[in-house]
Length: 273
Image (cartoon, rainbow, N blue to C red; front, side):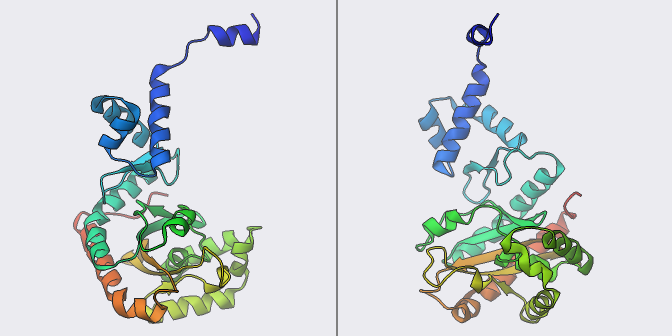
């Protein structure tokens, strides 16, 4: 039997096709409710719930705790204890983030470390002109350029910072070059700890770049460990860093403290190794 003949005689897997149809609908929508997926695919809600549960367990889709929408997983295909830890953190932080978002008229992100980059959990929908740039950020901001990554590096324990920087120093990427300049890292850490917050590296984009935006982050900590960072992104043409700090730094820090309190109440631990 030839390969062509064999391929024609093999039956397709209907359940897999339905799962792929749902995943494609989620990707096209960026974020979709159960009712929206029902309208887009024509599948019953009971069938959709089974498919969505399978996609979540396999690490291909996530359910945003903020607006109850299904979104593509920020680390597609991953599963296991780390993914469960991230989902638990996102769920425990959801109420504090929702309260913060009502106070701050700019996109708010919660990011966690993912190797030598950061991983954004449950991306909010864009607002105030950040629609294109905000989606272009992706889900894994670089450690040394993003406010999330610079915040994590500045507030994590010294031994963890050395481990991250050693890995970044071996990277061929231009975005990781500053890991080879320990004096710059020391200045960043000292400045961040004095201020209590970190901003995005302003040299990473040109003044006329469509991706130019400001971002400020604060840590979410459990004792000496950093479990994540909260960030606020804004347009420099609309607000200056000083104005954002004056208007919203206290809100971000209060939200971080509220998340920390919630994590301690439930005995939440560090990310699995």
